[in-house]
Amino acid sequence: MGTMIMAAETGYTRLFNLDAQLLHDSILLAIAVFVLFLLLSYLLFNPARKMLQGRKQKIADELKDAADDKETAAKLKAEYEEKLRNVDKEVEKIISDARQNALIGAAMIEDEARDEAHRIVKRAEEEAALEKSRAMDEMKNEIIAIASIMAGKVVAANIDTTVQQQLLDETLREMGEATWQS
Image 1: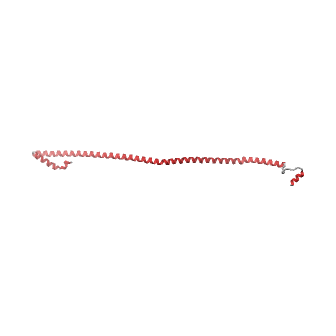
Image 2: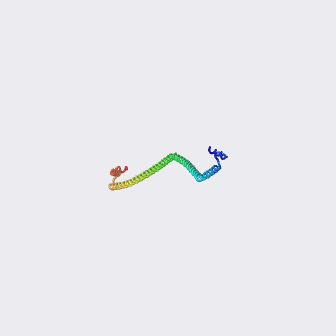
Image 3: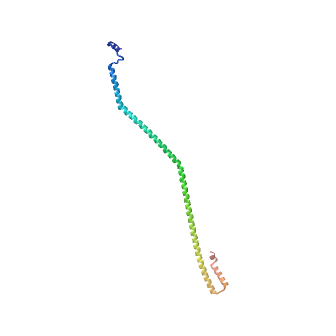
């Protein structure tokens, strides 16, 4: 009330104590705050915005990389699952090939054994034929020797056919029946 009394004494009244100085100070304060806001905006807010924008971009890039990695992992998983499905087929094929190779090998071994058996039999037959030929040659030589002995006895005895027959029987007995049978 004191100011109103003073204003009443001076002659004019101010509304809310607004005078030119207060308005001037208020305008200067508003301009200073605005300049300070611009200065702080340039010095603090812009770097903070840039940092936030950089962080936002980094997070977006990491999310994109994570999504790409997830997609790649899904593809690899699908490939491995496909390979696992094909493993049974490949194992069956390998076993089948091994069985075929074993059968072929067994057939080759069997053929070689059969050929070897034929060679052995043929060699045995050739040896038997040679042995038979040798035996026949020996037999011929013995027959020639017997004939010579008989001729000598016949000439020496100058005997008839009955005696010759006896000499032949006697000679054959001496040689043995086993010689003639083989």
